[in-house]
Image (cartoon, rainbow, N blue to C red; front, side, top):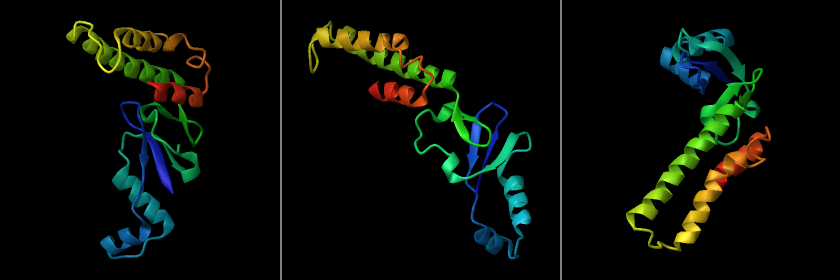
Length: 149
């Protein structure tokens, strides 16, 4: 059993509560399931949290790609695809800055390749937002693009 909630900044948070038996040892008393859940909510979820829901492991993504783009998708964790695209753009822009530094700091001397390959990689990164996978609506396609950066 885990909980999700949206914090006051609009970020979906995931709570992994301590096992009931451990809390009982700490409190030195036996808790009913309802008391255990109330204790977790009181101690682990802020009072201004919204959309508090209990979820199961199968409803949590298995990887952390696009973690900042998680959203409550009816009691499961889904993805805000616009935020996923923004994360790709940010990652791509950082990579382009790195490539620009290589090119400009070395006066266009090749490093581990030639200037043409650096220019081609820069262009490939610039073209990502025009890629049909970028606008496909599938989080798996967006994960593939993110991994290519």
